[in-house]
Image 1: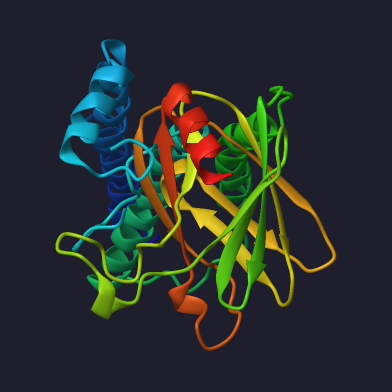
Image 2: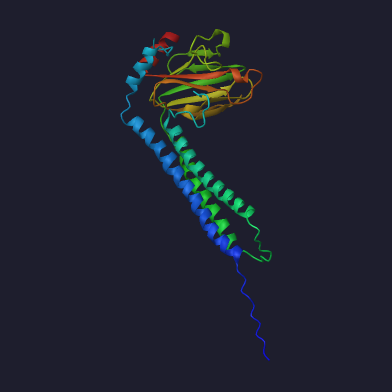
Length: 74
Length: 227
């Protein structure tokens, strides 16, 4: 009588979990980085560009001079 | 100047400080990327009972976690070096001002044309007028022309000090017997505050720096008045 012993395939639970979550981890961290780039870095650069686009330093100076903050320009 | 509950840098008043601000945003983004990845992986490891006790080698993952950090470091180093070299560009300053650190005040010398020099002491808290800033105001401010490149030569008469103005991205050590140089270019008029940034004795916290950036004509009138 021949006996064929069928070895069950190991379920590879950890490997499946790791594959799923490593992809997830990279996706989350890249998502965080993208969020910071588009919610913080880009608006920051834009704010400075917008401020200086039509900036009039003399007008700003006259406003400050009227407020009386300067020692050299009363 | 600094304000209560401030989280980030002061608003930039020079092109270099703007670059540093954007570089900081870029680097902080990388820091958040790495931190979120590590936090995710740690929480992953703590939320399972599954184990793998027969790992013999891990060539693939070892390659990845060598190459990836190297790439990240290059992504940080390239903008950093760009700004470093930008700071040292030849920019032909129109004015040179010398500052000497003392215990515990700064003195300034404008000697390009005439010999103008004065000391700059902190205004004590009891003598402040309403609206003035505690531990930041000085009797004689450093008046400078705005939108002009200025060379600052910094040294000390006694111990180590450091001449710092955060909104212009400046911090240069004042070392006795040594002349350090930095260049300054303010893009907006106004008052810009800094404090001594190298421990120098009991009144180290009480020797601030105040720059007053004004149009050139006002600077000229002020320097004539001060002579």
